[in-house]
Every structure is written in C-alpha cells, then in structure tokens.
Amino acid sequence: MRKVLIVEDDPSVANLVRELLAEEGFIGVHCQDADSGWASLIAEDPDAAILDLWLYGRESGWDLLERIRSNEHFANLPAVVLTGVTGKDVMDKAAALGAEYLSKPFTPAALIDRLRRALRSAGRSPGVRSHACVLLTSVFWIEGTLHVSEELGRFSDAWEALVRDPRGYVPVTDASVKTLDGKNILAQSDLIEVRKDQVTVVLPGQS
Image (tube, rainbow, N blue to C red; front, side, top):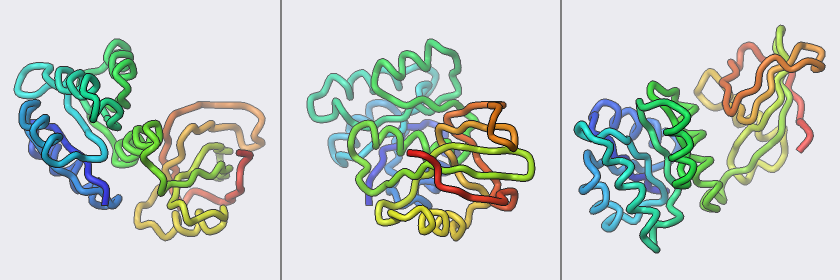
C-alpha cells in the first residue's frame, strides 16, 4: 500500500484525511508541524504528502514544501497543499512549487482527485487507468474522464466497478456540462461529482 504523509495541526482534519485515504487504499502518516513532518519524511520515505500551510499560527507549510523541493531525494515527491488560505497567489505559488492545491472545506472526491493528479504528474501512479466518458442525466450532457484501476481496460468493466463502489456519486475530472443535446457548454470544471441515481445513459467518450 502506498504511504501518504499528512502534515496538519488540526487533529479532526487529520483524522478525516487519514480515513479518506484508507478507503482508497493508502496509509496515512500524521504529523502536526513542519519539523516533525520533515523527520517523518526521512523515516517513512512516503509516496506523497498532503500539507497544510498554517501550522500553529504561521505559514510553515511553505517552508516545509520548499525544503522538500530543495532536497535531491524528495524533489519530485507528489504533494497536495490543503489549506483554508485562498486566492490566486496561493494557487500560483503551489503550482510553482510543483504541488496540487485544494482549499478547505473540501469534498472527499476532490481530495483524492488532487492526490491522484499529483501522483500521475510525478509518474508514480501506475495502478490507475483513465477512460473518457459521456454521462447523460435527465437534464445534462456531461463529458469528462473517469479514473479506475489499471486492470479495468474495457469501458464497460470500468463503469461496472464504479457502480459497485459504495459512494453515491461518480467523480468526473476535466468535466464539461452541456445542454442535453450536447451542443452548448453550460459549465466546465476540473472535478464534478455526478450522482449515480441521476445517470440515465453512459457512453465511452473520445480519448
């Protein structure tokens, strides 16, 4: 199982993140500050990191991320900045440091999506396969990408596995929501959650 370092000073948030990771097959290792986070990086050598920015009243999460990027061994470590701090400058700084950004409060699907993106960007996610899809509801035409286990090469098998998943929604990335005839785009999003009980037709999309 892949290991993810969680650096977060709020125990309730850390426990939630660890539970969400466990549901997706990850092991979460929790630290409450930047110094113990760095020590855990050395000791645990995790596959990825989820970092809060504000740790005990100061933005030491940035210091830890910069230290990670300046270290030869950890320079390409997949990282997600998970923070209540918002704004384009924060998003740009996270991107410049090679990290995904997610603001609090967050949904479980969004957190896992950002983590998987970080893993894919670093070439560390061999067990995931992407399928382009079209989902129709009674109101919308939705195009986007589904992410499933690598062994699910056929679209029909991938969709069946998603239906069996206990969650009531399907995470769709790089999504376009269109009018029901598929001609006019109403909205676009990096990630949307489509309720399974609202899907009436499922089709493979164009890769």
